[in-house]
Image (tube, rainbow, N blue to C red):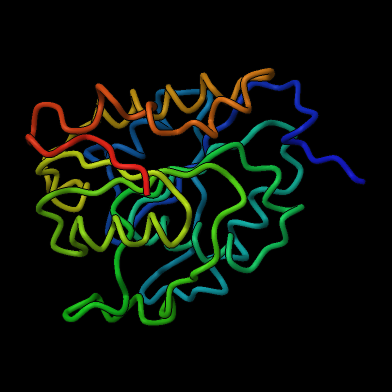
Length: 224
């Protein structure tokens, strides 16, 4: 049986950041992470006006090629949908290169009042991911409710965390560099270090002490 980079890796983990629509500039936490951390790299999804699911998935797939390191995918909004679409289309062998994924505020393209630019991403995939993942919700996200995020987490076999009132996790929501999210990323990266891969399967405890502070009083984490 062929082995994957996930099984035989020696390099330090690398986080690939997939942005949402209409996010950019120094007030966006993904841009800050990419500018200040050597272990973060932004994936250009190429969405000038209306994103296309197949094009976004192809760009993500291309970004994964040739990287000999355990990978953490961090998708926000459109980026989270791209990760889910990629996971639903790719083979388990391809997914084996992924040590874990954070899906932050995944928009719901089928919801009433959804952004029409996300229409090509509907319906969302229903297959369980072959890699550990955590769906992160905000109590006051206008793009998706915490209940729908929790449903998606169950659908994808992922963990679920609530970060209080963070809006849609965009620049307009005042998160700045979003240190709580960066702490969550650091926990993922620590557990993705060589020799620690199995620990990411016990994803329940990763967000404890990070999610829910101090912006909201919701329970921090649920495991579907």
